[in-house]
Image (cartoon, rainbow, N blue to C red; front, side):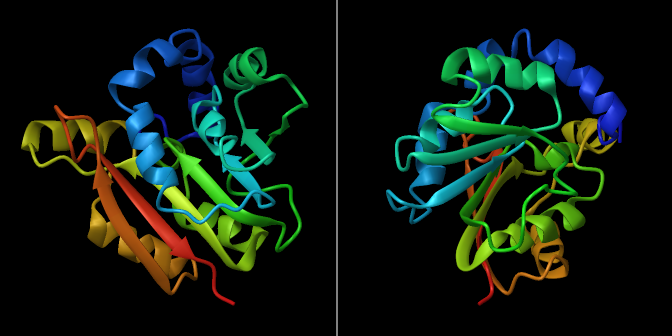
Length: 205
């Protein structure tokens, strides 16, 4: 797939970072972000990691629920946009890193969140297993990804460009990553209400 390669993804995001916040609201809206956050039980003292935080759109929403927020991305160009909005160290602690090799100890976070990132992971099962590893037992992992399109033309484009997946594929990935309990919710703007698939998984205790 065209962008599921770390070098290509870094180049892609170097240029996308310049327009991401202008394009993003047409695909991943504040209403969708709120809907996804409402699927979680984030307490005011919970430590939350945003994997693939990009320009900080999801991170901003998480900050409405807790002050202990951390963001990780492999693209410094994306994070520079987040730093402009949120600062480099406060209120969010930012890290440059890889979703498949998260630089954190086991059982570090109460919630692990990732929106709009899984489609670029070369090995999504490995990254999902990493999210489970760094989340505390009994915690939650939430992943927002692009739902597989029903239109055959868009299916061919999706298959050629990046990872798109439906509920059956999400079931397989989460099971292989070691999750036992999870649920999927489709969401999207009014003109495309099922453009995204959001999975909330409970971390095994």
